[in-house]
Image (cartoon, rainbow, N blue to C red; front, side):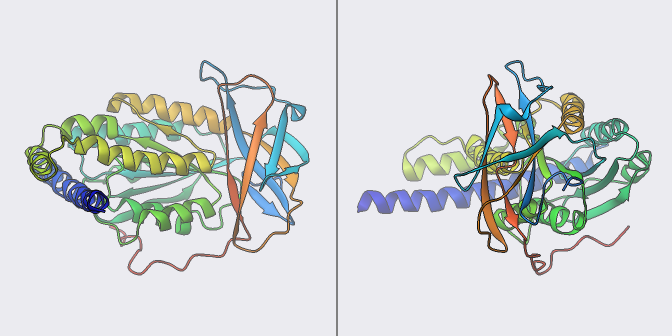
Length: 353
């Protein structure tokens, strides 16, 4: 009993310190940087016709092409389904870029802007793009457009903020900006996974992303930010407090980012997207390029569900590839006739600047 109580106390204390760490470190970093120079949808369900986007990767991590319907099996809620069709999704793409600008130094922000502009240039004629940035506010800086040159103009006025409303940004991106979007769609989030200013939690944000039917891609800056965080005096103080109370060594930086990374990775995989961990800002360009190639070469399969479906219920999908492959990424499920979520109180885009 004493051990269980101690463990519970430890978990509560750890969570509290991790929250304190996130708020303290990133607010400090921000302050410092601010002072220094069926067929038309990517994933859809209509009259029980389900269309699932997917990608197959070989042992080198390259996208596998020339896929055949007979090489796949699909289940819904453990019930085998008959695949009706399979092919490359050649429809135009709607891509929503969501950029974490808090906290970022001027040089970091410039690299993030440049990477977003280069990605926009890789889109094809007819593709559409929208851009959201967030710090303590969530800002829709570019509404949907097929003029990719507008991205550079929209990003030109972006500045760093002090805090991070990550989950609010995810929620608004999925439930507001992706509302009514038909066709091949994706949300690409660039962030360090820190949240210290949202009005809603991760679960509500993740549910909104799943209901949007867009593939969710995360470009995580944690590998970059962790090294900076380890040098922070506040982190060293928190670790010392932990040792004095529990007599244990504790790496708060790794624990905090590992937890955030795991929940984000699960969300990305469930929507048919992926997670990337670039080691520096220069590598972000390569990640965007890889995502662009993947979106243009994404396959889909369709089947007519043989299940009795209840509106707003989650249906689990399993896809099996019968030939050798390193990885098969596909949407792991869907909400049948999803109900629109009531907007969370106080969560809205910031007024236009």
